[in-house]
Length: 543
Image 1 (cartoon, rainbow, N blue to C red):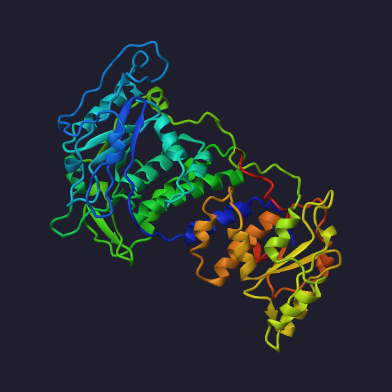
Image 2: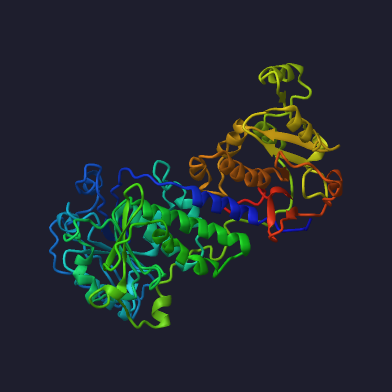
């Protein structure tokens, strides 16, 4: 035995399990028309029938919008002003250039032969840009048949905090609350935007190169008869996420959203502010695509990769393009600093792990576990009658003094789980060995597991319910449940085929001031078949 081990890893395990088990399905798209900072910003996703059309109701209720915009690139405006921020007339402080969107008609940017919309998305703190970055935007505006949309801090905040209950991404507002760094906010914004609307996202310090072929690089591959649905750069040459192109609602993009959210929450497990942790992990958000696919077409500029369900992505090998696909411009630190996305709450933690009240909600505990039948003769008789003749019903045991003891961190609770509560005499006798004096004992059957996962809103784990729906095997569900149960209630978890040894001393080996107790396996890592932990659920996300 080795102790103590800080149990913050439990939250990370829950997140990682959730990410690895999520599956993706694809359904309708949503058209969004937003008016922010005096700018009309149009987003044109596909509708369910494959046609492309603006939301006429929103347009009817908005200010006049041009639907006959010329394909000639618009020009940026420079206005000297004493204003400290963008205003409705586009004023900027000295030495900054107000950059407008270039918006083309939908029939130009969205065509039936190409799934990826011809819309370039750039994410910035403000539309007032330094000259060098404004010139980069101007180069993108020279791209024929492409709209170029800038999304500033105000628009990003409004978009990512809106309610999404009836969408595939209901957890985005919570995730945005935990996005601390520029990179985390940027990744969340670009992935959510592209999932909703499709298009091209590129870092603003990059311009198109000769290898981008004036945007036609993303057109259908007529030689091989395939369309481009999702394009990412080869992670070996460009692991960082400077470029991404996708159709709306692509499942690989959905996976990117899931991973970036998981990474944002994971960082808070290891550090109170976690500044810098997300940057070191963010490459994994984009590397995941190539690792999931097979059937590569080696030697092509865009390597087609296919999953078993026929979803297709393309991986651009920049070394094979006719000239550089993207060119990173020389941009000084001051200019890059001016576009950094921030939040008013600075480095406020999204999950506070410092609460040491160690108080269990007894009503919730008994409600989830099904309570104790020990003092209810009818319940005991009914439960016993539900089992086959050769099996014994496993009763819960609740001892009020086992929880919420002053000065003790790990509650005196034993947790086990099984599909139901009917067992052979051998298993029943073994479980009885864990019913120590002064300890509560709960056997969590499938119904109890479902009550725990779905019986409340888990603000700490925004993906928890979505991931739970993908648990197809009992072992997966048991792993998922055990960390969640000890997070919420604390106590001791043990597999059913474990028996307490002499050195365990009927639980007294766990001291009152211990945070956790793990058995260390031969490989030097903590076991999953047994561990004890104080509850952590009092450490809730900050509002």
